[in-house]
Length: 312
Image (cartoon, rainbow, N blue to C red; front, side):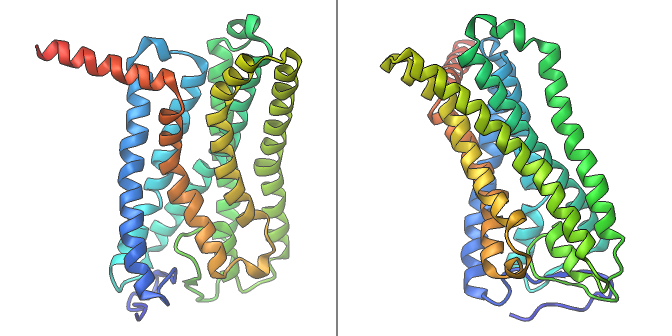
């Protein structure tokens, strides 16, 4: 399939254009995943807000996570579907800048938010008697605000520096989204300083939160092993299992892209890994939290019964 180069100033998202049959399959898979993401995350936000039983720190952070996932996928998937479906693979400079800023802000926010959720699980398991005192509403709001501010701050710095690089007419982005590692490859100047900056930002916003998550779960494992009770293990798994699975999916994929050697980034491996954390993970998150969580399933049943009683 030929890449449309008719618009002079537009960027060309090469994406999967060299594999037209794969594009047709991906279009269907991405569309279904996006619809599931919209429905699943909207359900979690609605249930968490409407059911008083879920007005707890855990579900406050989960609501933030679902909102991040909704916005994150919406900043990427519509453009991806447009490019997969038709011969035009272009995106306007303004559209590219918006996608870069928004997706980077939300991805960075999710990194920090998952660390905040790990701290919440640590407080629930290791400090159960003081949980409500430790995780008071003001602290929860401050921690969520910190996650959002980290994302906005990172994207303002990284995004602006990336977009200001001279490109000397280079417009072909060997990716399906406007993302910092792919965008800096368009520069016609030495980008070593930018690569170092990207690596440092990845250390701070990827590996530091991941380290805090691992420390939190280390303390949780110690606390559970001291109790030596099968019931305690089940409770800890129920409390932390969903979050740990989400962390593994998100960090396992996004870290591979941002920490991997630059020489292999533009290859198809990088694009498929990016598909996982931009499309697949936000689809799986609500399924993981609803299928593995008795509170959410119970809240859904209560809301359904309430609607049925009103209808009668």
